[in-house]
Length: 118
Length: 109
Image 1 (cartoon, rainbow over the protein chains, first blue to last red):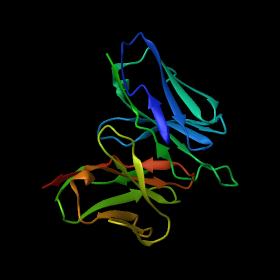
Image 2: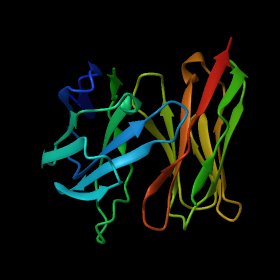
Image 3: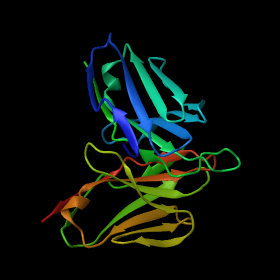
């Protein structure tokens, strides 16, 4: 496998279900991101992990819970979602090479998980 | 507030040239990115501009004018496979990426 992979590619779940999205990067990067992409809207940054520590949480509802066990893997745990949470969930990674620790480098994306909440 | 504007949809003919514009109002500027995203696929990195001027990469070129808050992506010798959405993103003074909603490009034979 190369690049950034995501599983599953498609997921349909009820509002009471619990599921998890998985992302794996094979690029040797040290930062990982979760984005939400809704039709005709800009990408919404949800969470950022740098060196396995969460550095950003953009006012995301608690029904979304991220986990980063190591620099290659990122999970998004889902529970009691709402129909408006239906979207494409994209994972990305980058190599933070700046001395300031700022995430300045190009982000590389996975193909996404198409989530439908019934 | 911060804002990135790009046309929602454009149509062009195979073999022709198309220019996709992006204007931005952000708190500071630390670079502008263009990504290509085919339907159901990952956004893929196309170009990065941080200084004014034109960056050429094969059939694709990207231009930046920081004083005007403006960029464009120029696609030459259009091919059917260029049908995709093109996303513009600006890194602001806090190194946050601000994204446009994307331009859907339709190529007709």
